[in-house]
Image 1 (cartoon, rainbow, N blue to C red):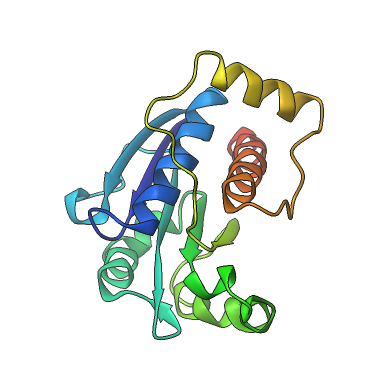
Image 2 (cartoon, rainbow, N blue to C red):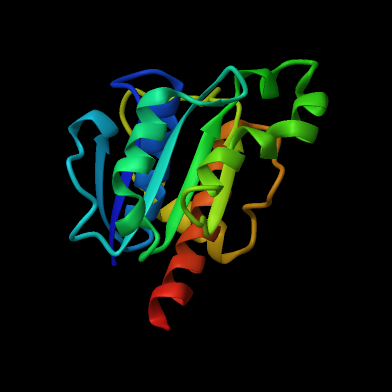
Length: 175
């Protein structure tokens, strides 16, 4: 399974989330290409696409929406998942934000069907260098059911969503 994980912007919270998603998918056996939307001319050659950006003004940033519009024909023919980084999810107003976050991606769903959507605060704890055995420990936690939806840290939420997305992509692509 060849997956493109792409994000708007060259750095920042959405790049960090995209990197973590790509790492989890690759750790579960997918052939993953990670690159910014600005460096992605086409989605051809990929069996699935995961795209994301930071929320801006209640929606996706213009670069991300342009990517979706430019590739909508191809994206509607393959599994397409999206993630949105919403910084207010990490604040007291997070509960209020959660009630309206689905509106942030309504314009994306109006152009392309999505198989999954993730919403994250973008507050990931990044290690300078992965520790030896990190991927094995992650797989073990996954197999033992120790990864749960709704864990407090954004990092765990991203890992959980990515692992569930991997399973969904395997099922969808097997049809």
